[in-house]
Length: 313
Image (cartoon, rainbow, N blue to C red; front, side, top):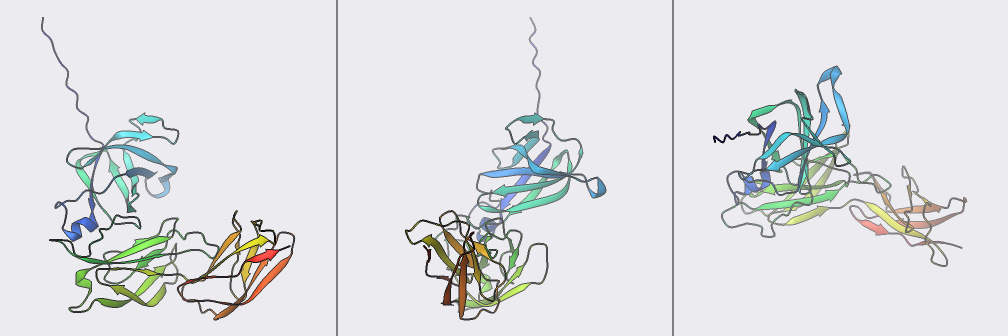
């Protein structure tokens, strides 16, 4: 009896060739260092021009990582409810995005699928939570300096979609919904025998608009620094110590307002580089209209100052 076998092979719809750019710049991992997991692969839109169709929420690609470190997509998509669709994407152009806990999002528009023969190469840039090594100058590699910060709206929400840049940094940074950012400076950024540089941090608001430049920010070779925001914080309670959520807090002479959270706490963030009087009046207003004011509260540039607790009887 003759036995026959049928051999089937999957042809990849797309191969992702991802590299950790920071690791590559340091030269301490392989020539093509692969990114840390976990990663998520998304398709955000189909088509171009007037026929473009956005996916909201984006569709998650089912991707596996092979022994060579490449990520293989075989045209399977996982829906929000967990259902996996096979042969999910028709031949067309697609906008793709790669996300990871340790990286900034990387996007590529109008990728033709299927594309089995040429890998899609993307560099992943470090995000705020990237596991930066603690040593400043690793053996056989290159040193670096870090500058961290965050951007918030007046009421304390993270500002997403803002671009933060410094000339000479490894790259710029686009904030996510947390508003946090980190910039990286190689050894070559620092002149010989100089370990501290003052830089200007340029912030472009979401959607464009006038660039806000923060001058005189120190960066230290081989160390980490933080650029603080100017802010006030406090709490609104009853005299018995019960928290009061939903109270409105305003700062005299400043735009916008904030409100207390479920624990009665509040934050008020000033605009970057906005001139602020050294002393301000802060008013809390309850839903029933009652108010209290803390007069002559100090404001400290690039720092958060606590305002005495408002207590309502």
